[in-house]
Length: 70
Image (cartoon, rainbow, N blue to C red):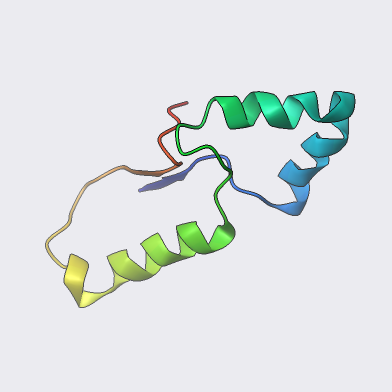
């Protein structure tokens, strides 16, 4: 299972408009990597797990969230 963290999408970018961007800044402060993930970050994990390189990975929960734990 892949658990995406805070990913920069049209929906999450709306937070930059809320309360002078304070909602966005609050989320960024919770991410140890310091930035929102991109959809490509999640897609790259999916591609890896679908590849032969990941053939021995089973029954895992993988967080793609820049270190943010929800």
